[in-house]
Image (cartoon, rainbow, N blue to C red):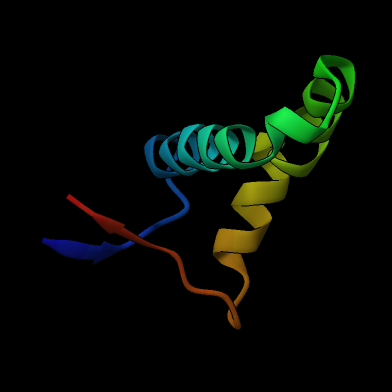
Length: 64
């Protein structure tokens, strides 16, 4: 089932978890652990992702 992400805490946390894991798995080999930690905390901050989900020109979907 494919569904559009909503701005609920549950969906924001799910997106945050998926985004951090995907980015880490893709780019960790070419970055220091410190740089990765800093980037993940900044780019995938809860409030940042929530505002992106709420943006009318952005859509996020989950496959469950």
